[in-house]
Image (cartoon, rainbow, N blue to C red; front, side, top):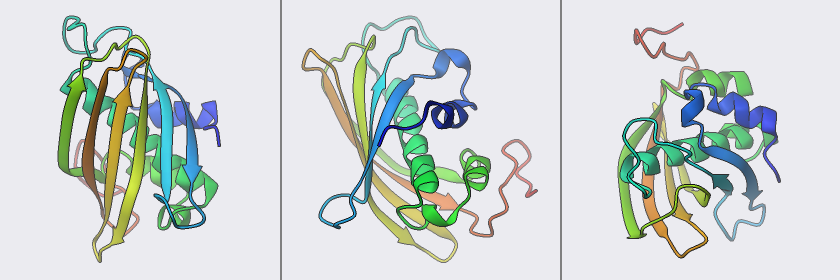
Length: 177
């Protein structure tokens, strides 16, 4: 299922224009229960780094930014498509309000197998597990990136989605609206 460009642009709105690396994406949902409940494949490009002179290869900061853009888009697509509980229970406006203040990286690991070209490459993020805790959701994901010249990297990231009250926190002040 292709991700609608309007949805992709809404998800990427918090990023500065020169830091919107995800160009297009498609989501895959497993109704049968044999695979991951949801995954997203995307085409990415980094025309120029948003924070440093050109290193000539994909690095850990860019890995994290690209991961975030993929996983935020996947969760938004789960909301819009009405699949993968508990995302299906949220409205898109609620999810987008919570995207930055309430989605926290709990654990992050990455491995770089071969240097990657950043001009055009691909990424895939999978939701491997969602556990509903009383005060937060625990989301275990895996991610990989590759290019057309055998460059590759991979990782695993655990997220905690906090504040189950449904009232998003203001990112700057920490207060609830």
